[in-house]
Length: 326
Length: 246
Image (cartoon, rainbow over all chains, first blue to last red; front, side, top):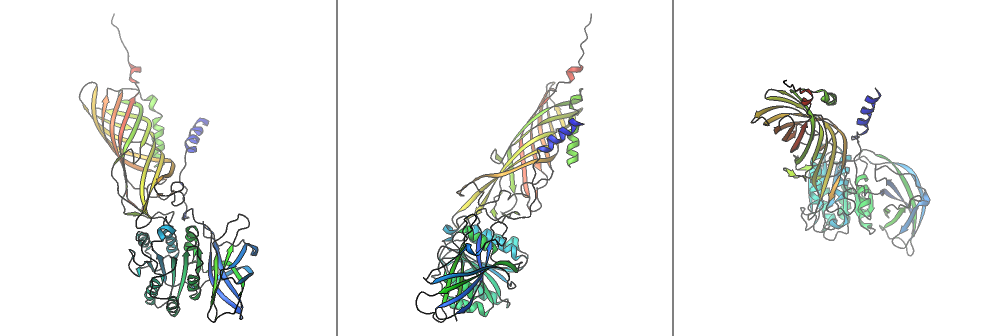
């Protein structure tokens, strides 16, 4: 009997079979990221404004919302010489507006061959599409002078067509070329969303500045707000893009500033919790004091805030609080 | 299926008692060097990651598509010109599969997945022998091979562009799970031609074709060809009696 058990045990001890998993993996290079959900003006006088931002800190692996950082791990800075002071960084639960007809735009300008050489953006967009689930969705790639249609190559997918959407998204990556034409692409997409008459949530992945579009930022913001379209922006690059942050802020969209593709993956995959309208994050309040002169009417002010993990030294991508004064 | 394979292995324990002209028992060594592993799809969307691969259907390849080494026992029961064989064996089965990941308008990455199986199997076949001399016979045979995988490894083989360790940062090593492999037992079809040298040795060329794909979403062709060498133990000599006339 013992010898039989020994034989069976010997056989089974060599067994190594697959353990099934429900978790789907983003690339290992992904890093934790910070996203601004909303910015708002609390108060302002001639030289000083109190502004507030609701932000999410997202774990790169499971895309959990991280909430174990304290106020002293937040560092605030201004890009225009103003004196900025962090007043509060409190953990809050936010209720996001209900999501509407989704659209996703991806810049396919030539710069992406350098900014995202391993084409991680297509994977992150796939994750976003999976979150959107069964809804109909518009997907587009934009560039001027490249291989995608000018100003934007759009395709509308009906519900439950995830398996058809993915080849299209990765196919867009095979058409990189040309320059960024964000505003013209946004204009055309918002016009497309008008057909739904429901508004929409438009997520855009972009980089650099738009130097070729005929449409301007005020026109885009007007077109978006008139048609109840929120523009969520994931910006890939090192500069502080006040224009893009303003676009998101003034259309009630989210904004993620990603200095590298590692944080871009997490930001893009987690920018909008399509099925989780209640999210937990931080409400960050900052005092902004001009160094000289007074505010002009309609002036946009931005501050960037970094979160640095005191335990392991990891520094999140900066998040921006951007408001437009009345 | 698992029970059937275990029973067949238990039968193999009878090999030492298979004494006589009608029964033959021996050991077999097989080396399969010609393989075709081909997914019948233009692109692959893995279930466990957000990757996407462009697929090219492939034909037979010598060595580069993978190899199989098989060792085990062989039991054969002869019925005049027909024979039935069972070969409870262990197989080390490897295969490589290359897929293309799209990067940009001008660049792609080639990702090579390597899979390694240890599996227990028991080919069962029916053969027909053509006698050409008292020493040499030819035969053809066909049957089925129940296979029970019991150890599975998978890895990247190489990646042409990824600048870090091959593939790990950008791709998921289990991307072909449920496409090229799974835990489930399966069955191969088997045909072959053999040369028998008296009752001591058989050399055959055999071809196997997997009858069902590992997963439900993609049809995958697994075809393998190679050689088998079977040496039969000379039990019949134990019964031999020599009488001398005075």
